[in-house]
Figure 1: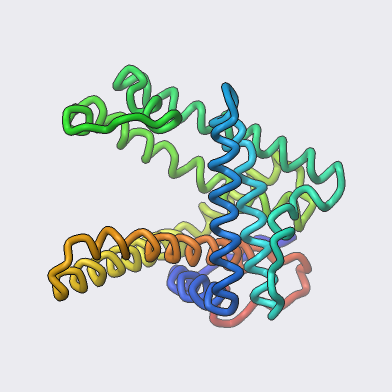
Figure 2 (figure 1 turned 90 degrees about the horizontal axis):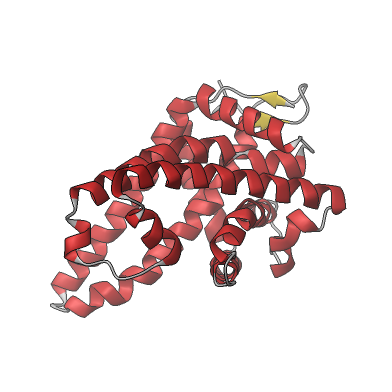
Length: 265
């Protein structure tokens, strides 16, 4: 396995590739993304251990979407069972993916725990268990500080686990080692990932502006609320389709394989 060095401009290429992969199989990718959300939502409803279970399953569920994107790229229709790819590769691989999920849950617990030191756990309670969010809570400076702290702390956690599920599944990497390789790949290619993040931020922002303009044009305030949800879900599905592209370009299984001229420096 070889780590590739990526040009920063490739971040925008990943955004375009995510959209392209989604549009190759829009019905399948939309359905699988809804399945992704449904599985995690149902897992979170399990009494007592629901939120933790959802966190443990997140790496495996993310891998399912990556595998679906890979199928779409190869011109095949991704079937629903592909979401269970992490658990269909043998008992050893399933245990490795579950261990990765446990490590992710522990890392997330650290992030939430540190944010709780700021506001006494109000943000953590609302995030994990839901509840009413009113103006008083949102305007609380401690709640705002805890929200920003959680977001800033989650960013490096996300990068550490970004490539890990794919490395465990496709490269048979040890779960702990996969975290190291994922962190190194993201760090070495930080410029590309920053451009990638800014590109998707711009896409989501543009989609919101377009929906707002259409609602204003038709003088229908309810239109924005009605249309925004499906648009946001489609954009999210495109984003998850692009995650596979970031992994595919960051690692080469065969060191003799020649990198693509436009993608790898």
